[in-house]
Image 1: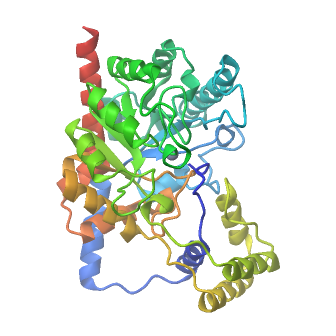
Image 2: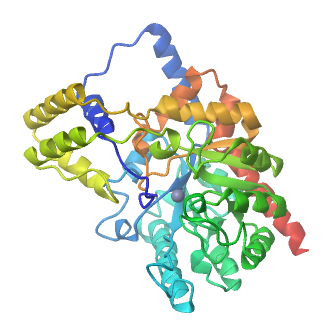
Image 3: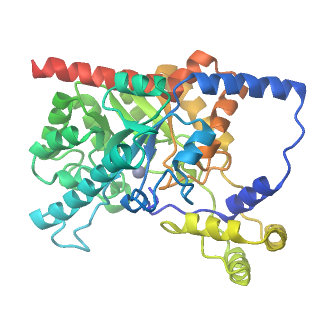
Length: 440
Ligand SMILES: [Zn+2]
C-alpha cells in the first residue's frame, strides 16, 4: 500500500528509471536471445496472476479509468504490454487509530470504513460491467479465471485488505463474499477489533493475536470459502490463524524476513506454518519489504531537493507522489531531461545513496521461499499503486522481466506456471472445497 508508513521511493530508483527509459537497448548475445525467446514462450503460455494491486475508485470513472494509460503502475495498456493476465484488486480500507479518532471502534467508525469498502467493491463492478466489459471480467472461482483467460480477456478478482469495515457484524463476511471478495486479511497497519497487526512490534499488543470476534470471523471465512490472507498480521495473529483455519491460508503480498528484517515480512517459522496449511506466500515486489536501504544523508536529500526545485519537479515520496513525479519527469523536454539526469549523476557521485532495490533482489526472496517451503507454496505479487519501487518490475508493463529472471535462474516452465498462479488457484479451489464440506 502506498499508505504504508515505510513507502519511500529512493532517488536512485528514479535515476535508474530515467536511465533505462532513455538508453538504446543493449546488444544481446545469441545465448541471451535464446533465453529471452524461451522466457517469452513461457510467459505467453502460463496464466500470470498478480495477487495484490491497489486502486482508487477515482481511477474507475467514465472520464478517467484504467482503459487509458494513466500515470499509475497498473492500467490495462500496461497490463497488456507486460503480458499480465489476471490480478486481485485490493478492497483496501486504512486502519483508523483510536488515538486520532476516539470513535474508531464504535459503530460510527465502522460505518465510515464500511462505506469506503463498498465504494471500492462498486468501482470494480463498474470496471467490468460498464467501463471495459469487452476487455476484463470478474472471476469468483479458479475455474472462472481459466475460462475468462481462455477467451482472451483479462481477469480481475477481489481481495479485502483489512477486516476493519466488517465492524462487529459477522453477517458482513457473507455480504463481502456476495460482492465478490475471495480473500480477506483481518488487519492492515494497526490493531483492530479482529486481531493484532504486525505494527505491534513497534506499538505493543492489543489481543496477543486474534480477538474472540476475530476467531469467529476465521470460522466464517472458512465456511464461506474466502481465502484468509495473513499479510499485515502480527506473527501471533498469523500463527493462530494457521492453527485455527480449516483451509489453506495465503499471504497475498509479503516477503521473507530472513532477507529483509521488517515486521511486515514472514520469518521461517511462519513460512513453515503457512506451508503446513497447504497455503502459499505471494512474494511481494515492494522495495521496502525486499531490501532495507539506508536513508539518504542530509546532504544528499538537500542536493536532491535543490535539483528538483530547479527542474520544477514534485517530491516523489508520499502517497500518490510517485505517479505525479513520473508524469512531471515524462513531461520534461528531452534536453531538460538529459540535464536533470546529468545533475543526478553528479549528486550520486558527490553524495552516494544506497543502491536501488532490483528485480534480482526480489527474485532472491522467491528463491529463498522455494528453498525453504517448496515450489508449491510460493507465488508472486506486486503491490502496484501502493508500493513498487523495484527496478525492473516497477509497473505492470514490466511483468515479463519477472519470468525472464526466473528462466535465467533455471526455473522450468512447470515451476514458473506454479509461481505465476497455479499454486494460488489450487489454494482457491481447496478453500472453496473445504467450504462446501463445512456447509454440509
Ligand atoms: Zn498492504
